[in-house]
Length: 162
Image 1: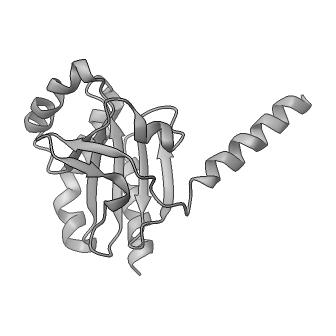
Image 2 (image 1 turned 30 degrees about the vertical axis):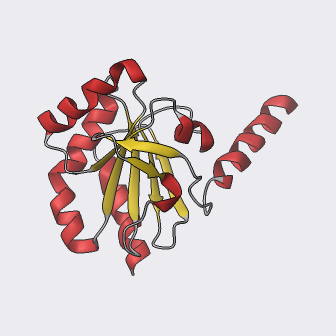
């Protein structure tokens, strides 16, 4: 029992360690092949959301579809930007662009085929969402998806822009 409590505390401490940290410097690619360093991601001083997904992940796709339905309203109200980061491995990378196109996702889509960013952030499962404030600090994280969870995301963004 003591080990379980200790491990739970360590997991909790590790999970909060990601909050208020800066994004690590990892090289990713856009779906058009341009290189992007993750420590340069920004939204002109406004918050942005990073949503990790994979083409084969049904909850990820449901989450990104749900956000797509309200994304125009979110951008108009808060100026928030979304980076959708695919963790599909190299052999499945060619499925990302058609998926994004078929779903009409207007996100900035990046590719993390070796899971370098996912690993650097200690992410274990997807979908996984981060909110980064206007100064580049990770201020919120959430994994998994249930219908309506996108409402919590926009509430957190609204708190940041007050």
